[in-house]
Length: 217
Length: 217
Image 1 (cartoon, rainbow over the protein chains, first blue to last red):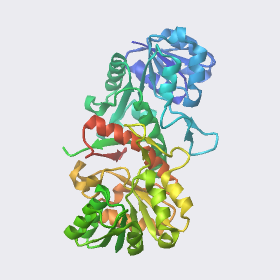
Image 2 (tube, helix red, strand yellow; image 1 turned 90 degrees about the vertical axis):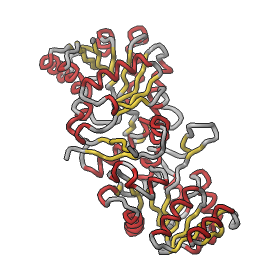
Image 3 (cartoon, rainbow over the protein chains, first blue to last red; image 1 turned 135 degrees about the vertical axis):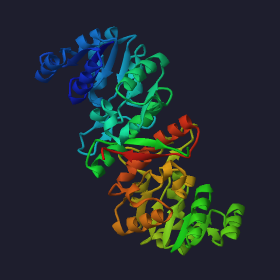
Image 4 (spheres, chains in turn orange, blue; image 1 turned 30 degrees about the vertical axis):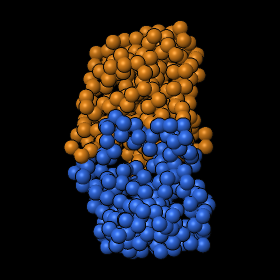
């Protein structure tokens, strides 16, 4: 599949490299196409490095790996004509660090970043997933809890969710641990989990953790 | 220990009954001291049923088991003179159902219900804990996930947290699974987890679940 990574920070590069490992055709987009880390990434992985708009043009499936507080601006700059009809896998979090750490959410409770993006780009097929784990856990779930832990999907387009799910499972996540929470308003729940995730990171002293849902069975 | 349950709904009665099982002296408080369910609870458990103020007077440790959206009003009615210096174990959630289901949080992000209560009653030793699981899991952790799952403490008073922790562990929670998140501002994280908990309840079709933190060990 042709995958366009919107954002070439640590998350975009790590996830993009994993997609390359899995045989996908990956373009990574930065604000500046000549960003050294992105060019080096392309050299190392055999992917392509370009600007945001170029990555959006290249990809059939796009991954929003920009910081949540700038995602809307970046997508607006890319433009609906390059985005419409495509799947946008949103793994960002709307974390505002302007008042220090811990950050607060720039949107929460009765709205979410994913829904803001969806309203701005109604023809984009947005799926929220993977914002609840650090990127090194995303790409190698077997490294924590024996691989028995959970991630979540939310989105209004079942076909888009199925494609994101397939990519997640290809990275080693067990099908029954990829839990579909329903429509994109489920992104509220996933983004509002972030404060607990951050607090746990502080308590545990590591980001290499996740949650396993346990029940009565 | 003398425990005063503020609230005699299903949560207050179930948790209060468990405290009775563990040998504590429990008073359960309702708006109306003659509330039939509370009187029946007292007959069945050997505890005492009275009004909110009476339960607050009886208890050395108080449990806020009122709906979060009325907690401040109930505590204000009880009055600081009956509350000051006592431990208040807050297990409520600020869920506003006025716009239907799912509810939204009446406070979130840069504040929490527990902190609102603490500001209103600065001499009360508030501990947030147990708002993240349904009451039947609170009182019998062994019934889900083999007892290997997590709850969280947040509060500014270490002595109060130690007493709440002791009660939690006495109910069967393993010490290493009762995770201290630090100060009472951690209640933001615990309350903002509620939307995910509610969404999971819908997906799983049951409230009998919890999360286990898993890492690299």
